[in-house]
Structures are given as structure tokens and as C-alpha cells.
Image (cartoon, rainbow, N blue to C red; front, side, top):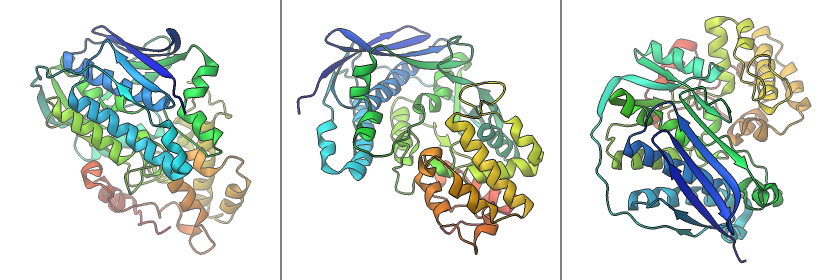
Length: 394
């Protein structure tokens, strides 16, 4: 199969980065990043490489040439590793036909750059804070563990660029974009697909802020067990352990030796997060944690996020009220496949294993043994002890 050639033209300044995707000199897509703060040379590079990963993995069905930016060996290795993870997931779902979608990457090489020595603060942690239920739960657990927390905000597709960081992309040619998109490849092969917004730029926030603050910290992120897999691969590739390890390895090679990612709620699912919040704030307060993708004020009730939130709250409510068997009706009447609704095959398997014998404990049978202790950092033990969670046995 002859693959189209896509040029990724990189345009940078101290506070913004733009990737233009061009086919035969015609603009197909444009990816943008903007910060309120100046980025250091290393921060700028890491952000560009994270955006290149986003652009390539989101538009897989082409060969790519990178212009106006030369990759070092470590950066090229990172990109190829991330593409490889996505190809592996596709191979599991599509078989050997996936070889038709493996891209070639053409770029100029950069021998070396001067690495920066930034001061590392150990007892402080950066937390991506949206005021949604995951970030509120993370903040609660981090405070109980004694961390000083630096909240920051990160927006996707907010035209006002109003927060600390902002990323978005514009589709300039819808038909061509669909031809190249990884999502279209999955759907054209009748394979369910779910991909959240790209996460690696968010994970880099402590590095991106380091030039402004004069130091960097570790990163805490509200990714639950739903979105992670035990073998390092998952339906949401941006949030797998293997993918995070690639980013951490690259960041350390760029001079941030103590950088790491902590996932305080990685031992539990969405149901567990809601149960912790209901224990702390009361069940009636759960509606205050608006995670709607459409409206920042009143939830729209119709987007996938709102449907997922209602589904989770309805199940938790049956547990708290003791009306356990209603839960089976909620699951049976759900119109959206659970793996797509949650972006998680893990949750799908958990719910598929519900029966009359174990349904009573669903809101507590959500503690999972540490899959990767270096990311969990002991939070599963805190959750188990303080909130009475038990190990799930799906």
C-alpha cells in the first residue's frame, strides 16, 4: 500500500509551539501549545517532542517528515517506542494488517545540546487540577500524605488560553484527516476505539514550569485503574505504564534526573474515587464535581463524560442504599458499551463478572494490588486502610 507523505513543520517561540501537518503543501491539521510562562530550551524541546508524539500517533496512516526541528537520538527513540506501543495495541485488535499502517519517520539529526541543571524539590508535587472528581480525590490523598501541592490548570481547546497551559488542534481538511486518523483506522476495521486527549504534555507540567519557578517537582495525575493495564498496554495508550516509562526515561536523559509521575488513584476505579468522595463530603456533594466536556457550569447530560458520571453515580447509589440488584438493571439498560463509555477494558471485565454473590461489595471490592509501585507510591495501602477497600477478584 502506497502511503501518503505528511510534513510536520515545527514553529516555536518562548511561549508557544505550533505543528503544521502538510500534505502536498496543503494544511491538513494544526496542533498548538501556549503557556503564560516562558519555556526554557529543554522545556521547549520536551514539549515539541510530546506534541510530535501526539500528532504522529493521532494521524498514523502516513509517512512523516519533520522540518524546522532536529531530533536527538533519545528523542527519536522515544517517538519510535511510542509508535511501537500503539502498533502493538492495533496488532492485538486487527492482526497483521496493521503492518500497512506503520509509518516511516524522516528527520534531521542533532548531536547534542547543553542540558540544564534544575533544582529538585522533594516534598512538593505538581497536580493537574480541574476541580473534577479525580483531581479533587488526588488532592485529598496527597494532603493526607503530607505533600505540599502546586495546582496548575491545563486546557484543551479553550480559545481564550486562560490557564497555565493550553493545547488544541484545528482540523483544516476533514476528509483527509479522517483518512489518516488512528481512530478512523480502528472504526473502519470495525474495532472499538477510545482515546482521551493526549496526556504527555500534561505530565510534563513540572518541567514546563521549571524555568519560571527555578525548580521542578514530581508530577501527580488522576489516572485510575480503569485506564491502566497490567501488561503496560491498554485501550487508552496515552495512559499506559509503558508509555509513562518512555516519557520518564526521556525526561531524565534531558537532565531532570529526579522527575517522576505519581498516580494516587491508580489502585482504584471510577467507582472507588466516587466512594472516597462520598465518604469525605457526602453523596449529595458528588454532583458538584462537574466533569462535563460541553459545559463548565451546568452538566449537559448528553456527552459521553456526563453519561459515564451518571452511570457511576447510579451504581454507587444502589450500593449505599442497599438496593444492590438494581445495579444489574442499570448495567443491562446502559446504551453505550462499557469499554467505550469508560475507555477501559478493565472496567468492562469487572462489571461483566458481577453476580448476585459479589454485587453487594462492588463499591469496596475495588482495591487492586500495586501493579507498578513506583507510580502508586504507596497510595493503594492508604486507600485500603483508611477507606476499607478490598482487593477486587474479577
